[in-house]
Amino acid sequence: MFQKKIKQLRLEHDMSQEDLADVLGVTRQSISKYENGTAEPSFDKLAILVGYFGVSYDDLLAADTLVEKEEPVKKAVEKVAATPKEKTEKEVLEPTIEVVSLLNPDEESRFVAFEVVEKPAYFDIDYKPNAVLQGIPAKTGGIFKPRNVDLAWYKESEDAYKEAQEAAEALTAGKKMYDLKYFVPVKKHGFFSVQIDSDAE
Image (tube, rainbow, N blue to C red):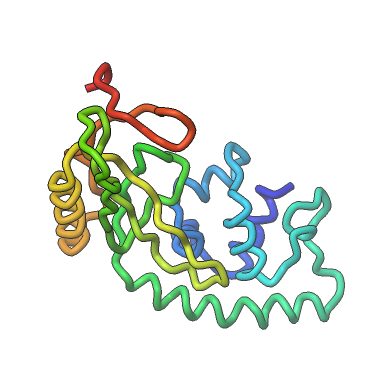
């Protein structure tokens, strides 16, 4: 089963749950959930695991034990794993801070920086938020560039920039986690838009 295989691979490469969390750009709690079978990684995370450990999707997801019977396969795993692990040890030095997205709680939550995206101001509508705060994930060393994660919406752009600054200051100060403060609750408005949820304020 997947949860046994990911734990076996982690232990074979002398990695802690925190080490593997850094590779995937998730929390240690997420790795724990993967290993006890209460959660499963997204396809992007599976792709990172396959590339990092040098195994196939079948090896990772099949019901039987890991394919280690053929010596060439085992050697390939050791060879591929050596280079990414060295990169990961360097990347661990890059400071990150955990911020849980209010819009996508299941997304990555460890970030190295933040940025504000202002919505086009074609006209002023009171019930529309003006900006969204995004977290920039840590690099994983894989072939996929991690995308920014939408964290929260803000009624005024100034509030979003203030949030971004305080989150960045908490990161610089070495804090492990930052709680969002200045956001506004939103709800769906049509297929691709949101509006301020005044009932939740």
